[in-house]
Image (cartoon, rainbow, N blue to C red; front, side):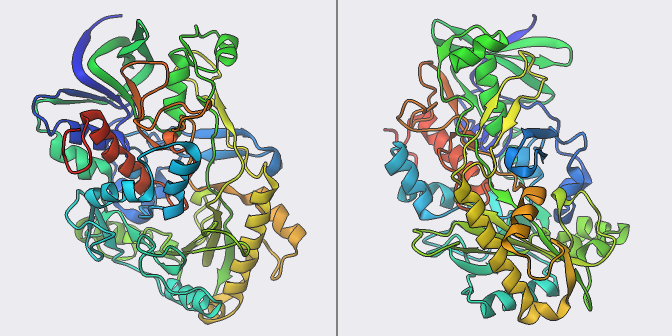
Length: 534
């Protein structure tokens, strides 16, 4: 082991929370921060082109995770793409800006003991982060670093589907992040003038000139260095060399729902019996680490179309160049152009289903380029009852952990998704979009039975890329961090990323993760919102 250095804060992971933290903490010129990122700079052209996001999957930009065999998915392993570069998954996602439902954050506070994380507590952080070109107060910010805009391209099929949704009883909603989440409408995106606007663009790039911020790429964290019950640094691999970065104040883990619990367990912080089993010396017996893993399952429904075009046929060098140069044209589509939030049954306090509509064939994570014209409408479960876990397979940080989201292990999840499929099939069968629908592709039946729907769900459910919960925040025995995001039983160590969410929000998780980064910065600095020192 060689070379070590000391900063006030060492942050592991330059993703949607870590980049925010590094930027906010270094606003104080007297505070030094080292930001460690396992990947490199986000330089691929495809990163800036919204429609190209799935072309990054299974490339050098991807951690390329797979789940364990899922009992309820016919024994399939689900592919989990996660970005390995500055910006984290904000450099790879579909850019949909959704915050979730008021009930989500009030549930964190009221049912999980996450004091200070109710909706009214977190709304100021959403507003502070956001630079929305359309919506303003009281729900939106217009001068924050994270640009949010109406998409510059919408395919005609998307408008036709919205008309069909309205005819099927969905009320139009032009702001899913405003007073009411329910309804159908166009998604806003984290783009700036038609190009992806990641947290690296929003937060890191403006801060790179600060002498008190050091960003080190190609740095794979291997363990948190503990002395006397306190985190004092991070050991990481840089090339073939192991280095140690020391933290004078705190170590903050922002690796996400996979990497943060993995790093805690590699450091001896986690369920004692499991750590001993894999040969890790136990430092702190913390049973909740790696537990509570859950994700939004999505099941694409795909139809062949007629009398219209498919977004995929515009995927050529001319349109790629146009999107890169001008931020215009069909490739500035984020693919999932529109959607809806609705209830699977009566009596629910908030929507439990979300829809993503794409004017192309998008199934199996978009890894198949459509060869015929298609349309996709994917119901997604956003109120998830099933819980899985993450476990180490090795003491080597380069080994992927065992990832088991336990999709559909709770029958309630499967029942809700069946209802979601039935509602989506109804919307596509009538109204304006029906004239463009030729025949079904997935599943193949025009009016699939419940048995056929269940088999479709088992065979075609995929991640919506929203894993959370593995370092859950709260006050119970299973809580990994307290409401200040401090790891229980360890001094000088926090976690700030999607892993701290005790329950996944109803909607895409990037905006909530940015919010966590914003609030974490205030918690670390000892400030209430607005900058006052507590």
